[in-house]
Image 1 (cartoon, rainbow, N blue to C red):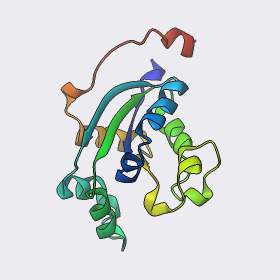
Image 2 (spheres, rainbow, N blue to C red; image 1 turned 180 degrees about the vertical axis):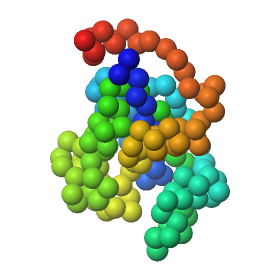
Image 3 (cartoon, one colour; image 1 turned 180 degrees about the horizontal axis):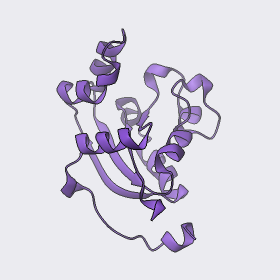
Image 4 (spheres, rainbow, N blue to C red; image 1 turned 45 degrees about the vertical axis):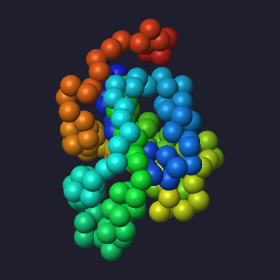
Amino acid sequence: MANTERTFIMIKPDGVHRCIVGEIIKRFEQKGFKLVALKMMQASQELLETHYGDLSSKPFFPGLVKYMASGPVVCMVWEGLNAVKTGRVMLGETNPADSKPGTIRGDFCVQVGRNICHGSDAVESAQKEIALWFKPEELVAWSPNQAPWVYE
């Protein structure tokens, strides 16, 4: 059952306002990952401060929280083999200038302050982030018909 790793992906306000939510979802679906949770919400300052708590000592932290609270976000949980690592590769580098074409940030972003998505950076952080943003009952257990065509 190595294909049950989960990652947390959040489309930031710039991605929502630019109307590319569907394109981002499409890329994860086409890769073969299984969507197990999705919601659109206006995140509170408190939730964002908790989520980005590891960055609280950075000078950009207040601006990051303010920006993230400035509009709706789309939160998702994706499941599949190496979902965390592969999800990060699909997003591209944090700084879009370092992202390769074909990645989400490489195709849609110009500046680091508008880099469209957040993606978990480790399995442990994915577990914490999923628990922070979703209640257990919001995670849907299901088996897509495509699974045997994605996994051996």
